[in-house]
Structure formats: C-alpha cells, structure tokens
Length: 258
Image (cartoon, rainbow, N blue to C red; front, top):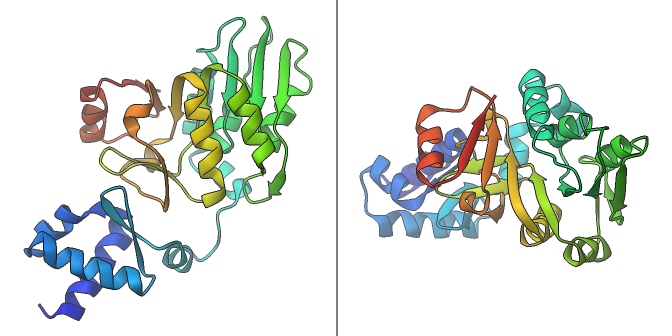
C-alpha cells in the first residue's frame, strides 16, 4: 500500500470508529507503530487529525464536515429519549437529603434535573440554563448558579467566575455528561469551552457519576476531560456493548444499567 493510500485508509478508519489508539491502527493496516506515527504526524500537520491522550481522532473541522450540522441541545433531546429518561430517573434516586450536587449541562442531565426530589432539602450547583430552570420552582433546593458567556448550542454558561464558584464549593455528588466514552482514550466532549468547567467539577466532587446513553460508548470526541477511572459510577442504558460493560466493571467502576 502506497503512503497516500495508507493515510486515506487511516482517515476512513477514524471516520468509522471516531478515534483509535495508534497501535490499533498499526495492527489493522499491518504496519509498524512508527509508520503510523509518521502518517499521523503528517495528517496532523494538514489539520485532518489530532493526537490526544495516546490516540488519534479526526480534527473538529473534519467532524463538522462529516456531521453536516453542528450539535444542538434541541436535536439531542429527541435522540434516544426513552433511554435518557430512564437514566435520569435512576440518577435522581441516588440523591440524598442535604447532598450538594453539581449537575452538568446536556440533554441526559436535563432528564435528571426534571426528576429532582421534592421531599427533602439539598443544594444544586449548575451552569446550564436548562438545568437552572428545573430548580426555580423547587422550594427545597438551594440553587447556586455560575454565570458567564452563554453558548447557545448547549445552553451552557462559561466563565472564570463560574469555574471559581465550582472550585470554592465541595459537592457530595456530581452528575456529568459526555459526548464520547472510551475505556482506552477516556471521556470526551465536543467543545473546548466545556473542558475547564468539567475538570473543575471532577476536582471539586467527592463522588463522580457519569450519565451516558449507550450510543456514547466506543466513541471519541475532540476534547478530552477525564479518564473513565475518574468516575465511581457509570449510569447507562441496556444497549451498552457487553465488552465495554466488562471493561468498566474490571476497572472497579460501579456500572448501573437501566
């Protein structure tokens, strides 16, 4: 196989798999690790791929070209809605009296926010408009809101001051969302502006719970923000691949399937 043909094959692999470790690509193509590294470096220089956390992903520009339309929370609400509702309901059952929660932005976390308990007091720290709205009429909830620049596609507010609010608090539980979950390449999101906020949430929380429907597994997006091992609980639906479920459990993470 000629070098340019091999590089085109690498791009096709990444389009199908979203992201892969370099060694997996080398094994698939039957070439050395160093050969793939040289190809990846060249593709990276052309801004076609990015190297992240031991693996390779398509660049965000290529992702946008492939997807056709940018991410929208309104669209995401309609995808796998039943599974997200089940995940949200189960997540709400984990909330206890006097908890301090941080609830991330996203369509799945919104399903949790709609089911916040009404019978006992607790605190919710949030930075997304769709989450804040769910706390307005909950008299038992002490709501803490980190404002900033509104990113309309995700209804997320982002600012150094908002991150500072998270860093000054300590949460008993944090419920985070993701656009991609890979046992090897970690937990990823779509937008660079999400990353610092999510990292602050992870560092400020005693128990970290990942809410992800099964379509997110074995998928890698451009912005890495956590290892899967940073979470004590992964909550998903029964479409999660068996091999992925086994890897999560072998890592000592509590996998909850609804």
